[in-house]
Length: 510
Image: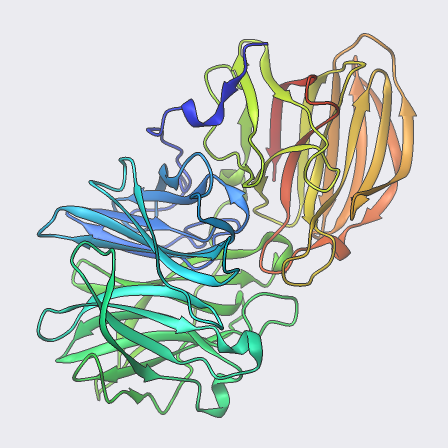
């Protein structure tokens, strides 16, 4: 098989994400599925956004929009995998455009291979849709440095802000600011603390700072408390100062963004201008989808108090059509850019009129080769038409973590076919348990079907020549939901790396 490396596919593609949204209105979530820590920047008449990738490559998607509501996936900051220096925890990208240089900068967080510290790093490109060059880490404190944001002070001096990740060691979390050179390759001068978590409502941390200017003030939106698990209580506050380096005053009615009827644990966003108004793009868990879907991109207009504080109405609804979330792939022309894989794997495949041929492996904690995309709602049907072989298992699965703890190994539950034997399985910590089996006629294409109810109740079946076969009993997968991420829906190819599997079509129906 003539294998094509993932790095060779074109970076210039278009995937309409919000086709149902009305121009001028907001059909939230504007970035559906697991899109944490969203950033947005305006360049001319266009908006560009990105979001956290965690351990799924390509890293840091770039979305494009004319109206902040309808978004297209147009690029990735790192389309072929991680920078050489970094190993995991690919979080919190922050886009910044330099008008004078006509260049885009993408700040991001990653963990350094040599020091094992969380680091703030930066990459640059001539445009958000062109190739990025990585410049590596700028700062990596002992407790970790995350959540960068670039801004200029009242004198035009360029600064990078970030959070010192003290909460990981039971310490406070100061927000630092330090000058950076115009090439964004080196911090200069002394760092300055802007503020830290010193109010009761903020809990164990403040983070995710974003700066904008209006009314003669610098305003900082920032998040507090716990972001990412079933018991999350994330909220967002605002502070202001006449000077970037302070003193900073926190709004006495904080938090300005908190749970409502539709969304919970909202925060870590960016403020951007549209039509003379300011809007905040932030992440939140939908109360219906909860942690099984992940933190989705929500857009809300900022309003102002009489004494010039920016606040939010906390009334964002869920207005997006579930039908618009559906997905079909026949793999005839290319691999759709929405597909992702583990950043640790050098994945190989080919596409064409026969569908997708995916190289098998026993990587990823024994799951095999994974090609995934995020879930977008609680109830769905995930199906794949497969040409079975005797050499490798081909299947589909719900991919999560071995537990809900930070950094848990990848794990999953799914259904695969080898020859004419179908197996329902669960793989955790490199150990696979068989949950059900079914024999089907040999030499036939097989449609495997995975149905999910309420985000965590899974049933599996197969169709061969129009006949349906049940596989095992209903399974509860809530124990596999990963910390900080929603479930991924994965194509699985398990076997020796000199074998491959063939998928003809894939559908996700909501």
